[in-house]
Length: 589
Image 1 (cartoon, rainbow, N blue to C red):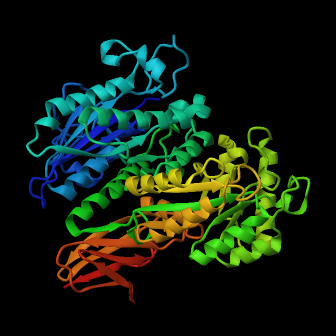
Image 2: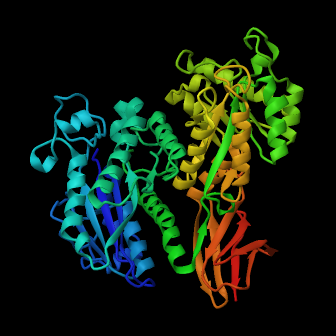
Image 3: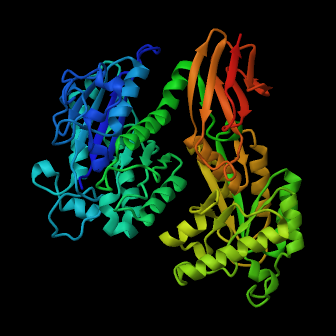
């Protein structure tokens, strides 16, 4: 097995925008990023660029220039080849071709690849080359080119050379747009460490780019694919780790390759899988390019609000029904209540703390609040077997559905303890599980809650607030008015803050990240053709479309035969649409 290619795509993107910066994309992976598909199986449109029409090992794309496996930042015309062997390709060849056809201008690729290595290193004395971002290990290592074992340092050196020798010399500057990735097979021996290893690598690259360029790349989009289940190195824990990163990181977009086809070695993509992944990555990137040409984008949050907050309340305390839900109802807000079924009927389990009953939960559900799963008996994943955890989750699902009539769409981990296998079980068939949170309660003050609101508005992020008791119970508020005053302040900012149930915000974010679309210009405007490859029974949030264009006075939007409601605010028009629906026709006068 062979590992990785790192790519930096520099897109000269000045077609419609005067003095536009060049766009940069960085990509990394294993052999399925390097390329193992014969060039004889390239799509016909790409074969037309070949000068060798027998084996298709030589030729040149009309717009793509590449610096492959070198740290001097020198570029040459691109044609698909592997790190070592001519005449092989993978998904990046598709992405470069589509980018070229989209831009019709030169763009540049810096590509660095080494096969057969993992992120995790076995031990400090192990020979080989690794992508590890472990700080202590990196301090003792240098790049491969300098005699060391760090491919991550090789990669950042290649990026630095591209910046110093080429990107920084471009007349209009440059902007790094995304980080593409496919990797994981070589870490099948280290699957339990994969989540933290990959997360650390992403953070390292983002931080390095920020330090190198002086620009903030902490939110650099990270686009990556899962491992096909047919792969002989497939480990469910690795794919679960990838999904967890995607769920936690609003700027991580995961492409499902679980059904991907492989070559006879049961490791490397065949031509269908390579073409699929490359085209899916391009579609995600193309959303940015489409905005530049038409002004259309899908809002990050509902109604194009600046940030989102979900309020979650754990353990089903009685005051959740008598105090919290009524206050939210009065303010016109909805909350999420994670409950343990056993504590409702067992006073010992409840710790003699008054608990909500099933009738109250039924009423709260029909008022629009989310009633979701916190485990039947609040079993800690770190202390019980997977079979016991599975039974605990399933029993609570059934009880909630029986008593409320609504299947719980999300799950919160008891004691906030997570295990890879448990995450996989808890996530199955759900919108999301609560993987991150901000605790409210005994340490909350009006000042630190005000600071949290300001931080969310500044960052444009999603705050998942969690508490247990209000006037009693675990870590309850010193003064309940702190919470009520906070909620009133948030309500007063509802033009900027989306307060939504945990399930609604999680579903919207996933759909917004995963939706792709093509845009066709017409004489009177343009047509948007949306595509969303998610389970519509689970992910069924309506999305908000935004058109930013100066001088709009009369805009009409149809999806299929249905005229959509629109809201025009200065040079921005908003409309809600079905991401699984028909074509969207925009008429601009």
